[in-house]
Length: 64
Image (cartoon, rainbow, N blue to C red; front, top):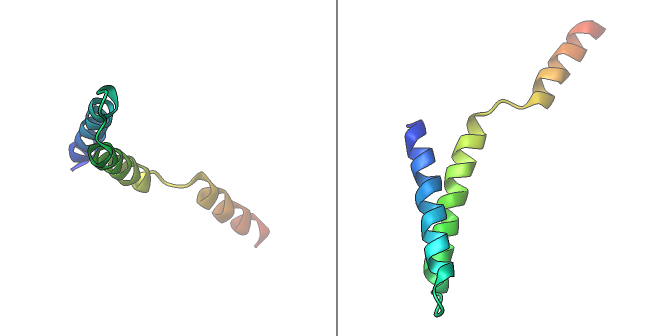
């Protein structure tokens, strides 16, 4: 499943660069590429734990 995220990022970046490179750039293809890119980045960042959450737990434990 994590390879799907990387695949979305690569495909999104490729499509966005392809849509941007032409003289008659197609805005809809550019938008689709950016959506794929952002979807992949979002899915990866969702799995990374927040550092702030870990710090809050340790501060509460030390206060009690």
